Every structure is written in structure tokens, then in C-alpha cells.
Image (cartoon, rainbow, N blue to C red; front, side, top):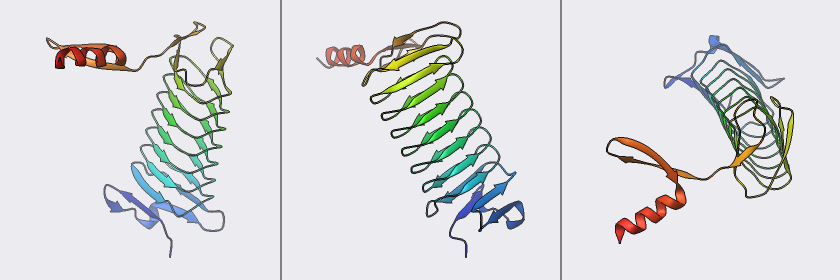
Length: 201
């Protein structure tokens, strides 16, 4: 009996729509929009369509389409499309498209497109394009592919890369959006907290 579950639209995925090779621990399907719970499994390889949610143990490999969510432990490898969310352990390798959010442990390697957000531990290497935001631990390095720039990140400093073909970065502040007369205004978190203090009195 296989100790995993794969569902689509709250129904168990029919057996003829996927293959599970117990010997190689490989799950393959062309289906999309799946929820795959392999939380009791390590060392699994997944080949799926887009918009899937994965929950796994360690040492897993993912080859997926876009819009996927990965909740995994350590030592995983990802080859994913755009707009994916990753919440993983340490020692992971990521190759993704754009618009991704990555929350990881230490010693990770990233090769991504633009507009990604990284919240990581130490000893990470990022190979990326523009408009990415980084909040990392110590000894992390960015390799900026579009302008051939190397940036050494400082611990506890949150930065955002400049636009495409423009070297450098700006220190990023946490912000809040407030609505005044129907217009949304973005202000720094510090200014927001000060405003609240003044309004409360």
C-alpha cells in the first residue's frame, strides 16, 4: 500500500493518470492542479504539470510547471516555472522562472529570473536578474546575470536590486499600504507605526 496521497479538486487522482515507480521512487504525471502529500517520503523525484502543491521529506527532486508551492525539508532540487512559492530546509538547489518567493535555510544555490523574493539563511549563492529582494544571513553572494555584477550581501540588511540593465541596489524597507480618500499610499513600516501612535494619542 502506497503511503502517499495525490488529489485533484478534492478527489483522489485516478491511478491511470500517473505512474509511481517504487524502485526509483519517481512520481510522473501530466496532470496539473494537484495536491501531493509525500510527507512520509524522502528521496522522491516528481514530474508534474503546473499549479501543484507538494509536501515532502528530504532529498527530493522536482521538475514542474508554473504556480507551484513546495513545502519540503533539506537537500532538495527544484526545476520549476514562474510564480512558485518555496518553503524549504537547507542545502537546496533552485532553478526557477520569475515572480518566485523562496523561504529557505542555509547553504542554498539559486538560479532564477526576475521579481523574486528571498528570505534565507547563510552561505547562499544567488544567480539572478533584476527587481529581486533579499533578506539573508551571513556570507551570501549575488551574481547579477543581466549586468554581470557581483554583490556581497550584508547580514540583516534587506536590499532590492535595481531595474534591468542598471547595476546596484537600494536598501529595502518594510512598508505598509494605507488608503486615504480611496487612494492607496505605500509608506515605510517605521512611518506607519509612528502614524498609528499619533492617531491613538
